[in-house]
Length: 292
Length: 334
Image (cartoon, rainbow over all chains, first blue to last red; front, top):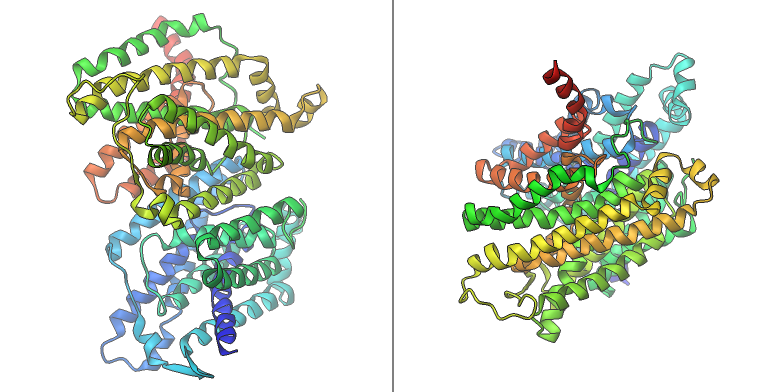
């Protein structure tokens, strides 16, 4: 029984992080119609910044301060996004999608090496945050408390995002821009500002995903590239541009992955991609996607 | 969908001869003039040129951007490695035959799914499918060797015994270079015929206007599917030819950033021209090799070049030269 509970927690853990990454990717696509291949690198950037900041503050800082530093990666990724959108992406909205994919692929290569330049080729860890929280007894087994914190942050983030998009004035503007950019613009919406805000929020989510993952694992080069393909599976299953879809997709991928690793480890990843293909064949726009 | 003015026009083969013949002769004579290392580098470039040529049938001629061409390259390469592992065959021709069959099967399977979509979804779907193969190569250690990859020794060419007395460098720079060159010429010729055939014209019509193409009676999905097959097989051949050069197949060639490299080469050379991808592949190969030698941060350098290219020179090297040519002509005749 407790093994099942632990599997379930692990599935939720995967799902929380995946939702943050894929949700950001989906939000950006929904509003701006851009698939950002460098999105995984913003997640990695968040992980690196948090690990670095925590490492710098580690000596003699109060534990509470260390936990308050956790979101540093998210804010750093948001800042990076706020710089990148107007400088690099804005010239491409009018051009064919191929060019957008290419320019974000170029960005991916640059960001990957930027992280190598700043933090070197070795993994960066912030395990003290993970260890300080200790663990919890579930029946006969132990489970790290930190993982529960990650799940909590994932749930909170989903809740905040829902409230933000559906209950605030900004959310209305965001959805209006997403549905019809020209008409929203004609109604007096500053589309450029909405784009920069949406991109910043998307990057913030990816950065937050990286920030909460880094105490449990570590920041390594290539983690962004790995994360992106999983995020793709999530948005393809859920529907590109849909936040509900990202949530459901993340849960599906989280559960399949967790049980896949223990039941059919060799084909665990292949099964995930095949799920994405089957969903695309049955429902081309994904489970929650709107057909354009 | 495309707003870029076309530089592709129906050209008779005779018109291409004045520059195609000197280039061919140069490729033929070069190994006598440059050292073996550079010859092998050029062979790598030619192999990638075949892959980019196949890739560009989809991007440049059919208007579909695949981000999963690592799959067919990898299938070609792994077919060679697995044939050697299980059948202990060393004949390059059998390797190629196996690679063609394997990449045909895989691209038929993937193409069946992918050609239902266009634009961004096509890109994502091809990427996701290629990652199925990557994860299989990565995880099935007993068969594929996982990240260790599979070693493949020097093959025999055309059934002849290897005559370079075990000197692998010399073998690659002489015998194998000309072998690759032969296949390269054959692939270029076949692709030239394909894109200038009625079939190729139909693909270009689909690219330029899907609705109108359908209106004149072109069966769009079937044409896209066949283009996908041809593209996959060309890339598979490139994958097979690449193996003896590298001596080793690893899952890296199935991972999606490698697909990105194929896209990069094609855009670097210019995807609106026939010869662009070939020049792009050779140039990219030199660029990458020198960037890796020049700085640890070669990836950032290449990324910056890609961003600059897309921003300033969307026509690529060949596309830009072709655009400039009438201007240059005018200036010189004045």
